[in-house]
Each structure stands twice: as structure tokens, then as C-alpha cells.
Length: 339
Image (tube, rainbow, N blue to C red):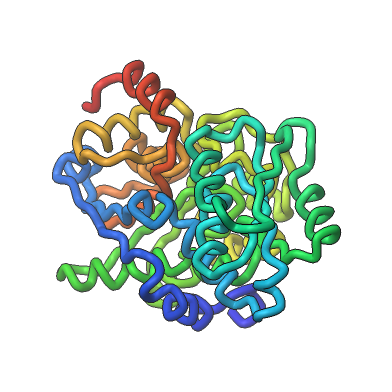
């Protein structure tokens, strides 16, 4: 895989940088989930990661590689929320300023948390934009050039991808520590592809026979379409409650990894995401944001395109738990009770 953006060794190096900084998040199981799906399901709870999402892994790994001069100038990132918080927190931990480009309609909790991590850090600020009318990538490039700061995008960056892959590296080891057979399937949410690319590199090295499947929201299936067409497909900003997957295209670095190592991409509806959020709240007593529910929703709904997973040992990455509590309460109140 030397022609891909990252290797297994890169993921292992990221794990060493993250040691003592990122949480080794728990792997959760549920008899109800197993009965409902007919599989043995292992949920990697990245909603319990620092700042509430897997994004901390990639952000800290990338920023930890900055030299002293880069740290002095600082970092710029663009994000709908979780990468924003991750970069702001990692920058604070490493003593550098951060400028974060965020959409005006970002969940208030994510916006407030990002600003909170930046508090007291000279040269740090949030820059707002209209996600439906403005290009966040262009804004980020312009600000980076104007301010001499390093741009760390949310997914199309080798160090970010390697950091995200440590979630799957941990998952494989944790399942092995618990005893029993290894995983034979891994389900991962897909926005720009950084998480699934990193995870695919990690698990296919450790478990060559494993099947890796990605899950996107129905309204934002750009990666699914890209795989079908053999090229990166650009779409309008999708309208979905899965705000972390409102990407317009997969990455130049992530797409070749997905093409080679991911078995396929399936989609789920916003309603299925809400039903899955309610399952986690009622049955497992955890808060998972809509994007974080993508992979689990596909498993529960037996999404079109997935193989029959009954009898299999399935890893599911719960990518985050940062959600506006008012909207969360409304969604759960309107959702049907879990079966």
C-alpha cells in the first residue's frame, strides 16, 4: 500500500503520539443490539473521546508534528463542528493559536465548545460562513495565506487520516483482549473519508479477511456515487441532520484508500438516524449524535447493499456525541420506540 497516502506504520506512529493524550475509548456491547441484528456487535464509543468525537485523534496527531516555528504561527481549520473542536483543543494543549472556519448554522453546542477551547489563546478566533453559499475550503486557503498559518483540513490530510485510524487499531486490540474470534466486519460513517480510510488501513492490515463498509446519509451519498463512477463526484451541500457528513466530495487522499480497501458504501435516512439515537439513549444510556449513528443505523436497518450480517462479529464506530440538546430532545420525542 506504499502508493496510498498512509500505511499501517503511520497509524502505529499516530498511536504513539496520542498515547497519554487521547482516551482509549471503551468498546460497548448490547444484548438487545445482538438480538435485533443477529450479529455480535462491538460499538467503539468515540462519543466518549476527548471533545466528544474521534476527530481529536487526527487533529492532535497532525498538530503534534508541527515544528516550533509552525506552532508559533498557529493553525487554521474548517469544519461543521467536531474537527473544529478537535483542532481548537489540540492547539490549546500544544500552546498554539487556532483560527476555525465554521458554518453559521453549526450546532450551537459545537460552536460554543470550539470558542471555549480557544478562550484566552491569543490569535485564536472562529470565522463564520454560509455553508450553502460560500466555499469553506477557499476561505481556509485565503486565511492561511494571509496569516501565515498552517491549514489542517478535516479529512484530506495524511496525518489526520492516520490519527483517525487509531480508533480501529484500538478496537481490534480491545476485541482480542475480551477473548473470542476477531471481527469479520467493520461499519464506519463516511463524510469526507478520513475516518474510514484510516480505519480501513488499520484493520485490513491486522485482519486481512475483514470487510469494511462505509455509511453515508441518503442526501449526501457523494462517496457512494464516486465509487460507482470511479472518480470523485462533487455534490451540493446535502441537507441532512448528520451535520458531520454534509461534505460535498470525498478527498483526493482518502478516495484511493476507499477504492482499494472498502467493500462498499450504503446509505440511511435521517429518520433511521433518529431511531438509532433513541436506541442508544434508551437501551445503552449514551448520547450519540446523528452522524455518529450512521454505521449503527445501517446495521439496524439492514441497509440496502449490506451483506447478511447475521452470525458475524461486527465492529461499529460511533463517531461522536456532540449534539444540541434541545434538538436532540425534540428528535427523541418524535422517534418511535425501539423494537
